[in-house]
Length: 351
Image 1 (tube, rainbow, N blue to C red):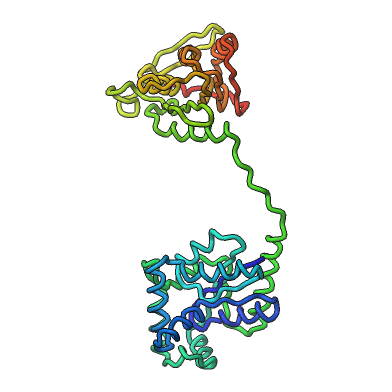
Image 2 (cartoon, rainbow, N blue to C red):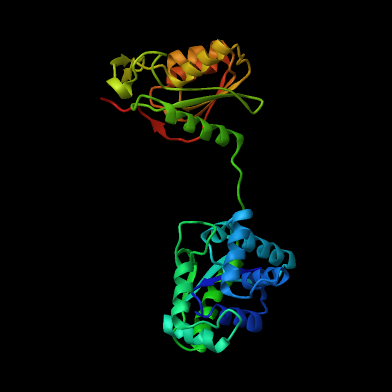
């Protein structure tokens, strides 16, 4: 199923493309123009462009900028056939239709004098105007900052395919056929099914979002503690409450020599994300017994001891810390599961 939206300047050939899609390709036709004219006739209003503009703007203001196009899309979707929706005129309509499946937007344009000659030939109820009025009508509908009102300029900019219709119909139809072949090929291509993230991926992504609150640029880490797939507490790297942050006053660095001989440099001004999360739980009286902790990399020795003592039974890290072997061994001895989502080994930035 393909649903084409048609936008473009007055008299540019929107109806010509619609007619071709209907007659040569079997599309169903849904028209914003006819939708509005039906309302105008029932209300006894003059059947002209002023009435259509007024009714269209009123409907969009009362419901939503995309109301009319959404109504026509619903009809097309219910029919389940290839369809073309004619006379898309507002940015709000396009933004809404873009979120719906099967939708593609065509725009048509041509020289203004040529377009005026065309509307005089088609001689519809809204086309009995002189050239100056024709230009004024188009200028009124061409650009606005109000999403409820016509904005042909923006609609053309948002189109998936723009057709210049200054030549004959055969040239226009050839271009339409080429574009339709592209669309049909895209629709026929296999679509990779959406794969939902696992629970570990889900909570790790939340931990990475929490990390954005961290206040030390040497390691903006975050932590989430979860039980029964419910978040209990979160924590991120930062100074103790009421004390200045590294982002404000700089780092307070200290070197540490590990049992394996490696030397690391740490900022002693901050409290680690895991420690902050456990402290939050303690202050709020939340038990972490049997919970799972998600963090960016292997917790340090101090964090590991706190994790063990507070009853957390599983630790999930995004990657390994290059000096995290001691913590891993502590977890093993304490019977705590630790796993890593990536094989990457991470180091703190040295200064």
